[in-house]
Length: 333
Ligand code: ATP
Ligand code: MG
Ligand code: FE
Image 1 (cartoon, rainbow, N blue to C red):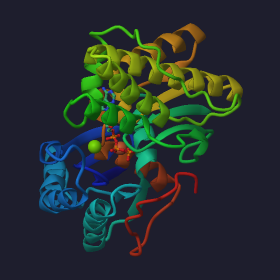
Image 2: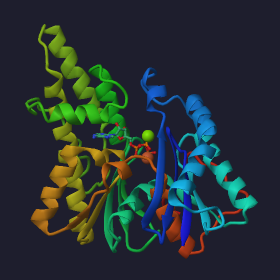
Image 3: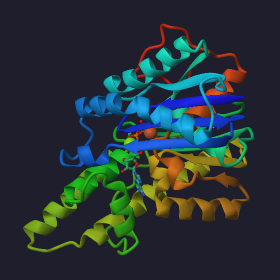
Image 4: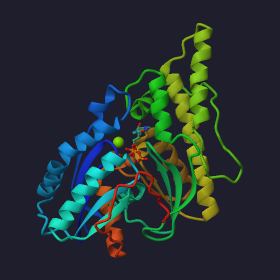
């Protein structure tokens, strides 16, 4: 089974060829970060334009690197949503055109299913499992008892973790995307500022990060009024400590409640060194099998879309010519 995956939901144009659902033959990613940096975030119109310019080259490159042609490809899988509508449409239309021209089946993949399936490219998924999804737009605890079936146990009520990282980074004057910078600085500083942890209701698996973000802003503001200077690395370390504490504690509670012994980490923030270290430690203590994708598979890429698409192929979940970009697509279908 050879799947061509295409991903254009945000600011990465990516195409990939995956064999047998798990073996990456190519995974070409063109990032637009440099174009968006000076605006401090992703500008939708610029993102769409980049995707339009890049997508055909990236697909060609992915096929070339994999040493396959469209004749060898069994299906085209593309991110259907969620994401920026103009960005999604570029990938969806490229996929539709290719599938139609070459008479190949078309598969519409949920972007977060893709992030979860990045783990399947590393180690075969076994069920039941719990996935902690931490990305630029999502923070979710997802339970799965079989391939392609998702139950959301909890999610953020306001900011996503990655969003909180980027906002805090912006507040302290770090460039976009700020997550990796905060992560790096956190390791240089000490978490000496006591920042809030939003536990919410005792039995809730939901998250909230906007209060934490405000607490960081207030801390900086109050220090400034007193004429004090708080080192950025202290802010970074304290912020990261709060985030990791809540994420790991809630995840472990969900692991216990659902009685699973398999955990996977997914999304761009899974690249976070502090989170990776802490969750690895806790899983070792408790005998839980943990998978974390390598950095290149944590952030947006098309291999993860092809991997999730392969599962849908096996289940016969194909799209037709009405496939459209869906900015608010739900994971639980
Ligand atoms: P979504 O997947 O929810 O649609 P997205 O695709 O924009 O959102 P990803 O590409 O999965 O998000 O992840 C990008 C986010 O990950 C950014 O917010 C970025 O700051 C964050 N990030 C990347 N590396 C790290 C890191 N080392 N520590 C913390 N955050 C990080
Ligand atoms: Mg991105
Ligand atoms: Fe993503």
